[in-house]
Length: 167
Image (cartoon, rainbow, N blue to C red; front, side, top):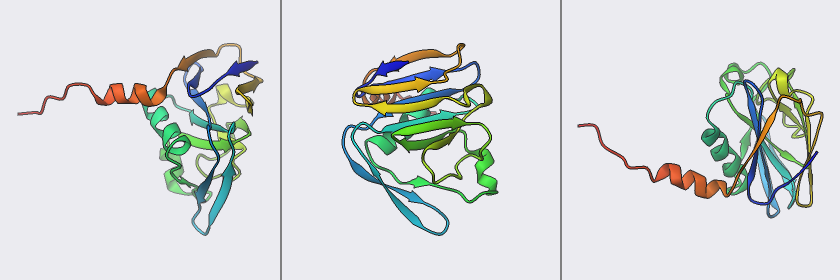
């Protein structure tokens, strides 16, 4: 299934998890920080940034993570296998032209950006970027799809709520 995207973000929701998909507008070098090395990955216009929330969570949090990578080029941390922090990662991110969702990998431990940890219900799905969107393969039939127009504007709306200090 082909879904056209520009600066919007695709939300793929399962029963108890979700995935966010965005397309990169311009090329940049993404640094992957490991415990031993720094890997520089070339990201091209049209590549995908995908955030996986295997246990669900707030979509706003996922949008922030996606935009930190896509717009602000924040480095991605890769933990060593067996790191105790892996179990606390609620959302993880991957970038590239083709990303395969997999539930049998440990969260946050794969510098190979074509793999991303997902819930069991979204495992096996493949996302592939094309000129103006994303091609989804092996998407479960129970998934729903939503588009978030201009996610930066949406986040700014969240930030502009009135604030009342506790007295």
